[in-house]
Image (cartoon, rainbow, N blue to C red; front, side):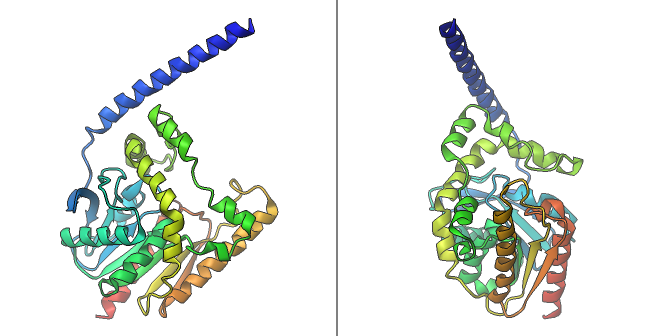
Length: 327
């Protein structure tokens, strides 16, 4: 009897895997028919996809977090910004509509590719860089390499590249454990990944587009994100050595919801440590520039761009006005 049940379960699992594999192939075929919402530029041996709004200067440039949604994280915010200046979001190599190419996933290379994208897209200088989480770490490489092209920086609950100095070994390990790459590759092959990441955006009508596109193209983005995870430690180590933006204006937007770690950290002591350490990291970002200010965002978790987008929009508009008045 037990042998029969075991055989039945194995048969069922094989059937489900075959069904999932077929479902995934059909879904990928359908995804290939989706028209990109932006434009492309040729970067050496591959194409990068970007989404642009507005036509004047300066240009606000968005750098996304460690995230398979790429430019979609900024899509709604861009639509709310004035068209009197330009905004550009893009997909890093291998994410959504951007081709992977052959270049390494290093901080320097990502900055170089973004700079070339902006040059080829012929958008007005100077640039205001907006980086969320891991994107805040990547912004450092761009500022370091092209300081004359950067007029302002907005860090949105940015990742701290040398967080090991702020966290206990136990918390550092927890905060940097990453995604289970082996399982996600398996899930991506058999149609499970697109179901797992279906709820990355709120279910509100304003995110209907993102909730359609992101899961559909996840089969591409997943591998690129996992590759970035492999390079994360090296990127953070190099970014931590970039300690100054000079006098480039800097706004530090910091999530301030005291309950934001309730679902991810159950141990009260570790949660209290994380809240304190994160606040210290964010405060220390002010030392990156001689012209900096912090903007705390009550009632918001890490994804301020979804929970309190108006705060980001206001900070960007304020930065644009600040830069325009200095001309």
